[in-house]
Length: 377
Image (cartoon, rainbow, N blue to C red; front, side, top):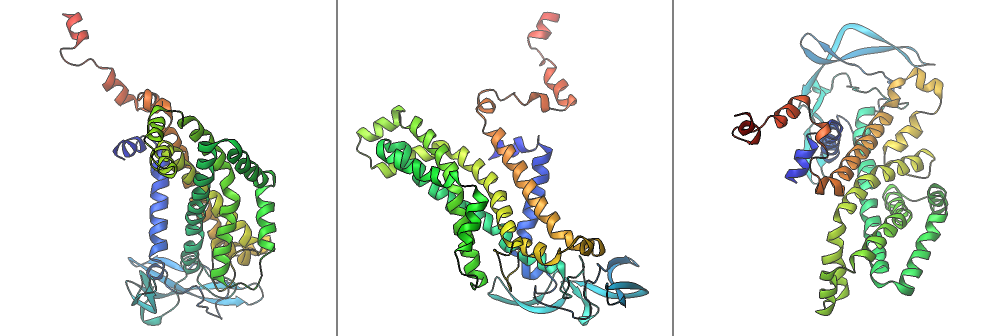
């Protein structure tokens, strides 16, 4: 881990990716505390309210606005009329993680004053920032859960296929190829269409996760199968078989750790794919349903037409969050792939070209009393 952190410092995109992902997952964990309102709280007279947080007289305040056109929902800001915002102020009561009853929020209007719309409001007057924060719980966790299930299936089928070979290998690989022959998105849409449309949010979440995992395991399983097939011929595996160690123990305690670097990279690259797939399903109306909220469902409900987006550009905020998470995971996966590359292990100076000119000059200087100094004398 120390080597990876040292290597990460040489990759600017990796540092930026970590800086993006860690705060987003902290926001997800403490969503009730960070969001000023619940995702269903609506201000009926404030449809499409623009963002109203301003820095005024040394403090952040919520500037009041009045509707001047109820057809296009145009607002006019009221000059010098601001509502106070308090950090750790009292707001809507909630239960942190569904257990601890609380009233404090990261920021909230003072004494129930003018609502705070950090990123504007949607067509029902609901705070978009609060909905994005709560939506991150589905959009960010579904990638990890689907990846975990998919990876478990890939390790199980790929490990047994590569280790046993023969008819077992043939049957498992033909089964995997059946899933791979059908385009992934079409298969997901077909499987989702077979399910009932009256499922609640929890059932939809679990079924979508299972569908994504079933579609995502074959490619990784084929790769694991090839690695296991080559590793099982190593001497330490043959010795374990001669000692009559059970097959399952050999696979999961001696072979799988040898390919852990591949599994780590596979996890980092699979998570954004599953997040984007869930977003696609929700956008098409086959994903998360009300009252639950995800980034994909926010995009579907709020961005209905281009004219709507031109009039209320803040509705595009979920897209930027989704894009940031996807790029961060992809860049982090590229860095993990480079770090575990065999050339990095055998030739640790292959990154020499990435060093700054100052560090290259420092390494080029001969050590005191070294061969160059002796030659000069």
